[in-house]
Length: 225
Image (tube, rainbow, N blue to C red; front, side, top):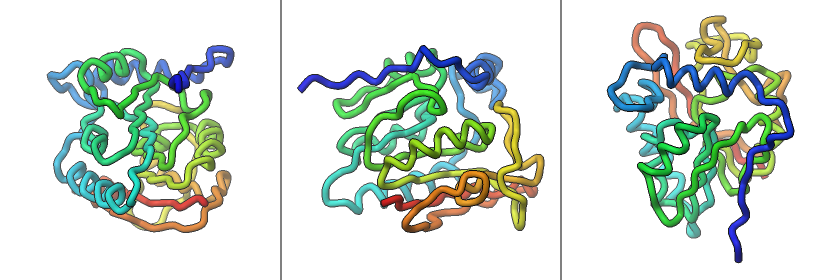
């Protein structure tokens, strides 16, 4: 059977997010690493990455039949590369075309595919589980709302968000870019208004408290149906 090609929806006007994320990498706003593309400390610091990787591998290997996983916002793929061998198929997506082109040459496997897509506009690949790691926190509420509708097609969603410690008002709106809501003492909660995402089960997998009151990185498993 011929593989179905996943294409960007060029008929719709792109959000400013694409240009913003291209600028992040071009100007190395998430760190002046020596590599050509760098997705920031959150994708490289061992105290953040290692517990996450261990947790996701435990989840993926708990199934008798390997899952089709869609990594929505794969970045420089320093994290995603650890999961490919535990899946039936791993589909990695990012909005920055040069980053995806680089990933395609650097990371190869028979069950690995890369696509340049704007997940707020384009159709998402089909799969069992979506990994959305520290992506929504950078997006406006309108974009998140568009994405949430599509995430309902997955059986599982594993969502990671950088949140303030303690109580906070969820989902204060922002302009998409490198910043996040924590500066407004807010964070993304897809179960709260205005998103009100409907799920069957919620399970917090891991919370990593950052030093110097910089918040907490929370990873949550949502069973959708």
